Image (cartoon, rainbow, N blue to C red; front, side, top):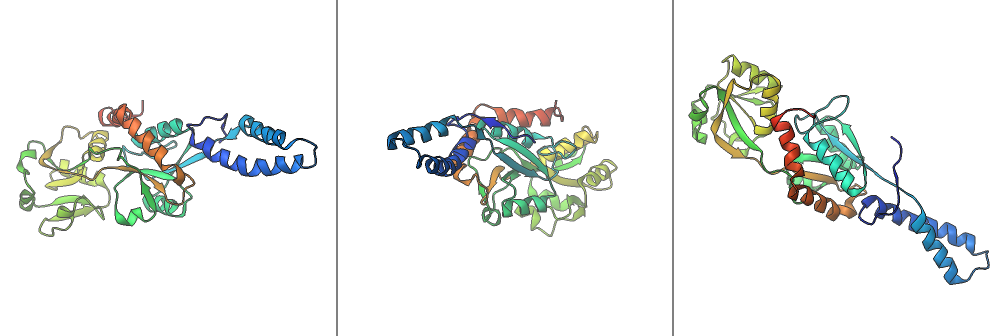
Length: 287
């Protein structure tokens, strides 16, 4: 990727970072050169300042990592989805160059831990993650719900949590964490599957009673598989924790958390993030 060159703009993070390096390196070089030149001390200072102002600054890459989790981030030849739209706009506002990296979830977390990646999105805040990540306030999305999908016409049968006990089987993704009441209740007859697509196909055939999922992700995948009119959502809805942008504690952007927070707030206030989410929850594409 070619380097992006920009002239000093005080609102851009890349300028503040580059200015610090220019200040520490250029002053030493220029001052050493002028020590052997007969120029008044104040003239030397003026020359240094002029050089700093006029020098082009190289913009920094913003390393974003994400696993395949449609429609938030969709792997392919080029990563698409809700979050890449948000990351590109965020980088644009901060004067940075976004680099989108695709990786399995565990590798993404590893890269964030060791600082080879700067940030990710679609994360819930938890104490174990806060040990190596800064979670940027405010959260950028709070509309995720855990719901139960049932055969058409049966959504009303699950109105409260106890209604789950009457189901023959509730499908779930193996190793998935949904919400504590469900995760820790062994009285519910749960059937784990490796992939969510298996659950959708079996429910359409009447082989399972229901499956649990998050509304945004499940709705998107159901639509892509052509099952839009096959299922009903339960009356019971469990609000999920909000989603955050998270920055590695080893990232070089840690001194600029306030700027990231301000950019996210502005993107929420002007409706940009809502429009990005609607783009996929309504059309399911990146057009």
